[in-house]
Image 1 (cartoon, rainbow, N blue to C red):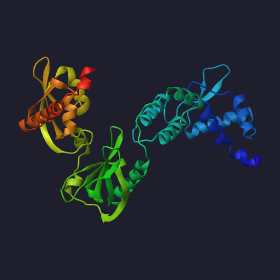
Image 2: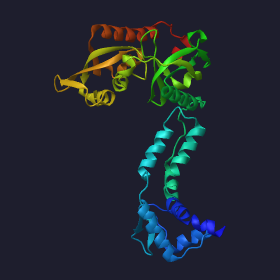
Image 3: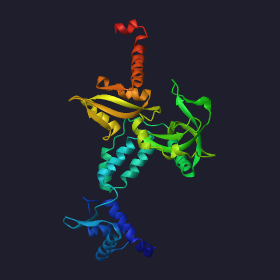
Image 4: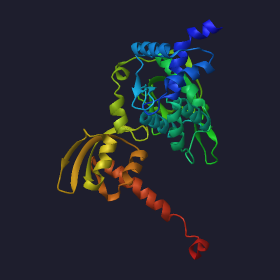
Length: 338
């Protein structure tokens, strides 16, 4: 058994460096010898130096730290502490993750750092109050979609939305949808499947967590020019909250105060020409949908649709319907007294 442990000496030593050291924390040679002894491995000072040289030659960045006494540490690894924090924030901000899965992933990400970094990361994690999904079916569905894409097969599923009582209701009279998967997209905290519908020659979008009974169908996926030339970047730039609709070239008159928001949404390469010191004209393509109108409404008079006139008319009707809905109900006398 002792011989077997000695054969694993380098692996144990590497694990010690990985778990106990980083660019700010090291271990002395006596500490390394003591920790190896706890694992049942005898080591001498000279052998430790030889082992460190071997690990360095293999590619591990083990360095002397400027400390007294001299300490050794793994000073670089796959992710820095700041990068680990970014990964943890990304996990914590993902709405499609349940609390159990989120906590499991955070623990796994944190273990990529040293024990000192893990303690620091744990102090910064805050998840209270974040809205999360209530089931973990999304993980199964994502795997199925990836497999279907690789196998070039269609997927079959039922699609649900929620009624006023928060109950899932099957769409399309409960029929089974049969679609060609095109791209899997992560947007605004949710996964979406962009599919190709052969009957309508269109690209419908489905929330992955709302797909039930998802399976790979026996039927081969459709292959055509539309799918081969599908531009996910263009699709994402004009689609709001992955809400499908007709692609419409649009001209917007934009106030300077909201130009940053326009760049955030459409990118720095969006075509813009200044009109005066306070306004600019912006050209882009959007999907005409209530989601786009809702996004536009948040800017009030700071953004105006100039062209096309038809889209401006749709937006006007959208706003008028909202205003009208507040005038349809008679005022509650009891509420008025309050």
